[in-house]
Image 1 (cartoon, rainbow, N blue to C red):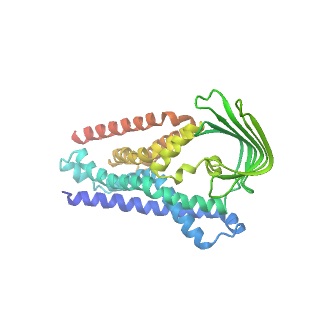
Image 2: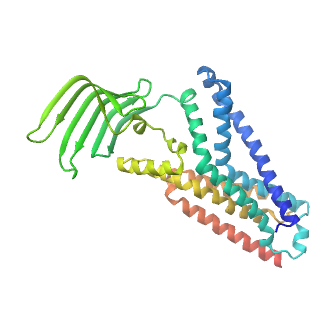
Image 3: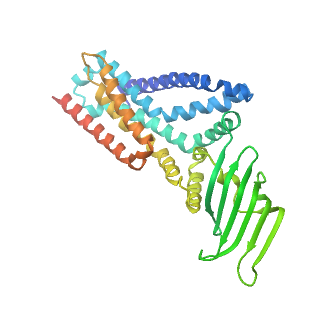
Length: 354
């Protein structure tokens, strides 16, 4: 059962977090609008779409992304304030152990962690889909793809030299089919241009050449125009790097399996996105423990030192996880900070028992 002190700390934690979240998101929206206003005007984006489709989902996406940082700052802020106002001293004088003092923090951190998990797996994918569609329509430049190569189910290998989104045209399209053992080519198709009919698997080929290989049915067919059906669409070939953000957990799992079959080099990036959706919310616990540990004792110099220490450690962890060169080792960084948090708890607990 929660005591009055527990409810007091939980209320302080949550109100400080949501207040800081609102302030930071408001500032982020102002800076983002100042950067993109000219594009919105040039592309005649409706005000309702800017507010609802873009900035409504902008707040959800970036608020969740930086929630761990905001939680960290919030914990340091109100805990250091409690320490400076000598509100924590009576707790220590009552003989309360540090782990008991930490309990309401962990309860509040659990609430925020669960919110972040639900956001990552269920709400944000659909929210991101709306936001990314808005960006594609009113902000981003047309997408171009060059030197594409991939393998599709049915032992099909697809090549093309370039794709231009403005006219939805693939140039120098090549399709090869191989037998089940992938030892012998059985079909070859080449076209000067290929256009995927929107919403279907049908493609319109121009100036095409196709050859059926294998004795005695070896034959060649050429023509000016032809409509054929394939088991892939242009949406699977021409994708932006953030396409995974708009997929639910099950959709992303299937997408990764399909990308593996195609031999895509972006599979590690998609897998990191999948794992981060679960791992990042749990960082709330580590950051909460470190934040409480470094700010729960009154210091003569005020709370500036706690902020410098805390923010330095947070940004070190954040940018190491974000950096491409460190992605493969990101779990080690989380482990290091978990050990740091444990050490902080042990040291503070020892100090309070002296």
